[in-house]
Amino acid sequence: MIWRFSEAANPFRNGMIERAVPYPPVPERYIGLWQRRLLQDAQGEDRTTQVYWLQTGSLYADIRIPVSSGDRSMPETLAQQQGFAGTLKVEEDVLTWRRWLNYQPPDPVPDSGRMRFTGLNEMLEEGVHAQYQEIWERIGPASGDRAAFELQVEYGSGEMPRRRAGVLVMVGDYFMYTLDRLTALPAGRSLAELLQDSRLDARQREQLFGCEISFGRRRMGVTPWEITLSTLPKHEGRSLFAVHGALKRAAAGRFEQRMPWTSVRRLWRQVECGASFRELG
Image 1: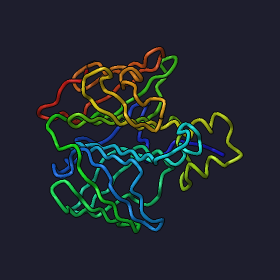
Image 2: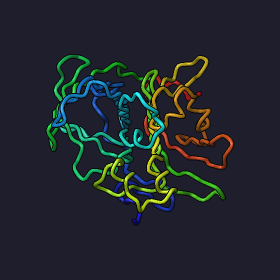
Image 3: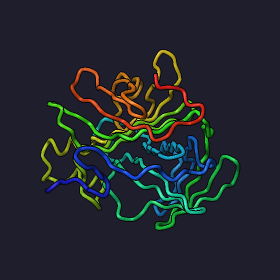
């Protein structure tokens, strides 16, 4: 099996990510933290999967963790998780979630939904390219205290730059932190199917689950910036900055992050700063 980067999903140049800016602004009515209450599709109804979508005025992140009574660290359980991050395209009432990174293998069909507000903080989404309905409730309001960052480059051992997509978004008390795998997955198959592939060696099998999507609260306290839900269960209950290091301003609109106890460092670019954004820390 040959694993290679997808240039469409990882548009890097010389180790640095290059994207057109500024990003088209997202209407205020979509900004905030949304929780999915119901999914109806060909497989039936789902009311139990923990689904959160955090949307700023430029970038978004989404996490979907099924409720499990077993060990969440087991590969078979991890393979059922979903999540993605990137930019949102808004065309009248049709939203398309462009995915810079995806926990599951990339899908050739665009992720587009037709939205209808059924209340001030409730939306009904109907699939454009697939048959499904989802009910969303906004549980974290739109706020000027928001920001968005994109990962420009990550340096590993020996200060070698490596290609990796990443998104950090925050609105009010909530944040999502996402990092793509260092090796892209083959298209058109689920993680559960890939897990059964006997051609995978131990390193490739481990990399199947190397995409992090972590959701949490920015509030101060015993555990500031606490991760409450993650595709990497070992990070839950810990501070984001204890896991990955604090973001420190390196230049105007640029932040550096150094992982504790490692040589890994990341350079982030701030692409959005709300009118009442509180500084990181």
